[in-house]
Image (cartoon, helix red, strand yellow):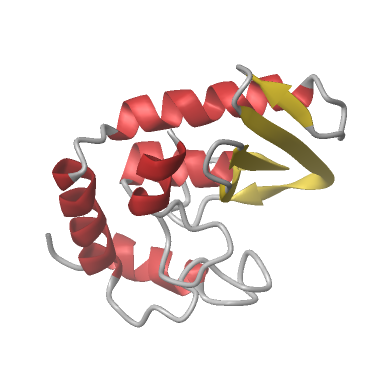
Length: 148
């Protein structure tokens, strides 16, 4: 994959202060294409499917909404808490706008935890972009494997 003008613009949009205060890259200095290619490789090696992972995470987000802001147990194994703020966030790839809804998902059997948003799910499903190392909302494939 090559850094196209669209990907260069997306990377600019991912910088801290552009869309979110902390940005999407954390301390990761790699190009977006390198981040995506590496995470696609890890997904494949872990026998994970992007669409299936997104579907499961979306399910927990929707179930968590039933808690009305309080943590709830889902499927007897997970604790889910939803935090919602007013407003919307645009996708750094400039292909959508998403509500500011964050889900905290904890696997109660191994205490693995991940925080993700509606925008995170879009980035994962549409762009295979898990976000950079150190990003607050990175959907780390290794953690996903342990949680799901």
